[in-house]
Image (cartoon, rainbow, N blue to C red):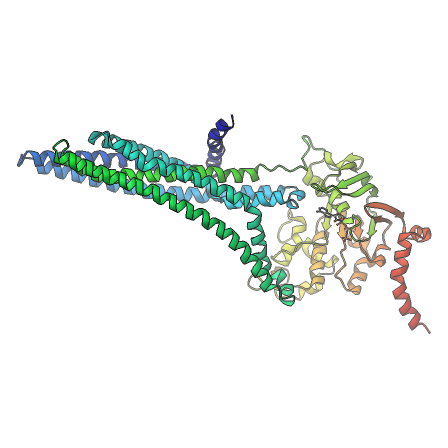
Length: 610
Ligand SMILES: Nc1ncnc2c1ncn2[C@@H]1O[C@H](COP(=O)(O)OP(=O)(O)OP(=O)(O)O)[C@@H](O)[C@H]1O
């Protein structure tokens, strides 16, 4: 059963590739097929005419001086020449069509890979399996599907041509056929064996390749340049990289050496077979059992047959290789997000009345067994500013990820106006929120785009960009930049400018303000802001966010104080909840934290107050 599956696998691969070719490059697929057919027709014509030419020449030599013999020969020479020119033209043009088709298919494959990557669950990015599959899909190359098609056509063409040559060879002597098989079949078996061997080796080595690529990135990317120099990690990382590459290179070289020596043996056998046959034919000709024409034809076509056979071997093993590697691409394309769309999504309320609610939510990151959130009950009502406080690792960011449906809870549920959020379309539901995470993205593009990416549906020249920048306190420094909102925020490209970390944070805040969402989520939005900027932001925060709801995570309790309601988290549970005054009265964790932070300021007050 397994064997049948293995045999059928290339056919199944082909069944998936053909629609892909059709979708991505219909015109070039048709054209390259037609041109390939012409190539076959002219190729066969050349062989036929060559045979006729040899026959006519032999005849002419046999019947010396027969009138019209020479013109007959010249006619065949002209026809063979014309067919050869037509064959070469068809071959070149079909090569061109295949190349164009290859480019179209490669772009199509890239688009498919990107569309899967941007839709994959966040959890995938945190699993080695995802990275291995993506790396393998990339290794498999975006050209593979097109190669399969072109190899298949070449295979068809070469099989036909080879069949014609075989017929010609058999007209000379049928004993030459097994010789031809000896020249072709062992080479095929060797190639297929080593293709599989190399493929399996590469599969095993994916993580090592990724580790090497990571080290390469550490050494060459600007993000790490400062630490790398100051901690003098350069030599250490270079050694690690060289060791990994050395291991990979050594293993690959060993496989290549083995393959080369086996191939040399096989090629020698083929040459011995060829010269043996030549000797045999020469002897037969001397004995008068073959004509000189047969010997000439043998010399003309046996090597052609051998090289066609070798091409055929290459194409077959390439086809097999492509089938294996395209399988890796499909493995990636077949990844389906676990955060699934409901079959019939419910409409997300435009103006929620009750707000978002966590009901007894528990959560464990996929692929791990420790629960990071336990029995969470939390509500964010429309227009309410809610703060989340807690020690590092207490689960605040995880809670936000659940809220935005980057993950689904392991137990309990999250509702919007009483409806389980899993019943909404994912993208519609996510539009309820605008978020800035602690590790927000620095886009290497213009200031305008960095802000507009908060709501990409807005046109490029939207005045909302400037309004958001003003709200985030970013407008003054943006307007001082050389090209203001058009300044590229990177030193990677011409005319770019780099910002300070606090300025980047203001840009990220502007991005969150850009989107007219119902709830704004800010995960430590002011960690890099100076106290003046932070004070300004929260002084009239409610107006800045246009009286929408907000969830703010902050370790600065002076910020948290302005919230309508505060949740205190500890080790994945909500241990206290209430208004600032209620929590202070309660004399619990919050009160203790607040007292400790306030203590420093009071000391200064105390020193300065006479
Ligand atoms: N992607 C992840 N996969 C597995 N575990 C994770 C992941 N992200 C966070 N954790 C774990 O979940 C727990 C809560 O992390 P979380 O980031 O939610 O804490 P936090 O309260 O936001 O901390 P901080 O104040 O440092 O930002 C931690 O123990 C952390 O190790």
